[in-house]
Length: 204
Image (cartoon, rainbow, N blue to C red; front, side):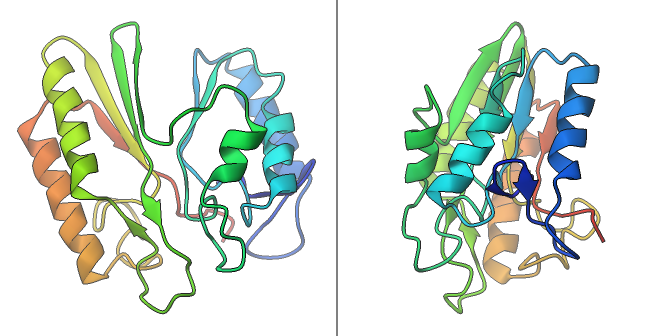
């Protein structure tokens, strides 16, 4: 959840914007010499064009390929933006899908972009996963589960599965619990190595 709001500067929940977080994060990622880099959402603070440009600059010199999914800040975070991910496709090169399946060696990465509504539309459920997307996930899990390591990523933690995942922003919403149960049923039915999410911030 890097939350870029201008080149070299990211939004924080507490205190002033930070220029140290993107520098330190980039240094840490470079130090471990990764094969791939995954960003499970919230690349921007408000999905503004200049924020997408800032994120694109930040990932420019990584040697490893970078793959992303949308977070709630990246799609219609505020009602007056209305870009719905357009900045992502416009400002970043070779991006053609929010949800994607990557076969890298014998590892399968299924990156699931949720649908994100404006946070302030009073329905208290900013993220949802349509049934068609569950069918998409199941199709590829079934296809690859016998002989590969499968990793599934989406932005919002499944309710009750990680620390704060019930209490952090709509984790107890009955609709999100319903979607969580659908996801957990799918994970129980197939051989999935790990499920990875973002969304919960640690600067508290």
